[in-house]
Image (cartoon, rainbow, N blue to C red; front, side, top):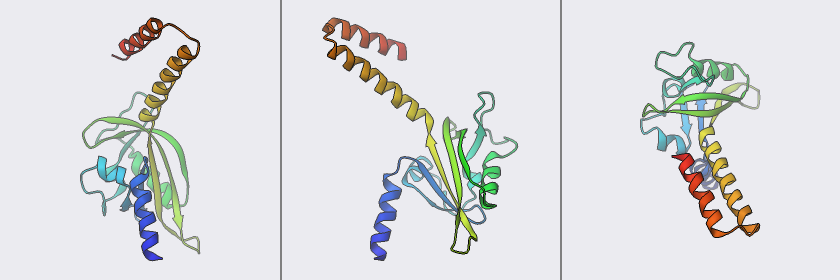
Length: 168
């Protein structure tokens, strides 16, 4: 039974696209999904969440920096470890390579049977990737619509070329 649970845990961690982070009651990262381990080649485990993940509100003017104040990562984790849920916040995440990604941040406390807070679980979903995928799918749908409407091959190719030029 224990091996089955470990296999499920490992498969879940390896197969999820979101960054999943589990912290203990003091905000120290104790588990991270494969996505986190891949993107953050530095050691994440046994380090404070706010030391690894630099977040800032996505208001278009503020970008995360090492001196961002107040520390949004710490504020979010403090709320969660006090028992609050933080759901669907659009924020910027500064990646280890210095790039900035727009992500959807959600976190909630983890309780034991007696409702004592054991830690928190954080989910970071890359919004830029989702929006880019939506645009690609929309383009594919438009091409399929042209094919269904029996548009000429030259018209379809012209439309595709215009879309490609628009992206570059």
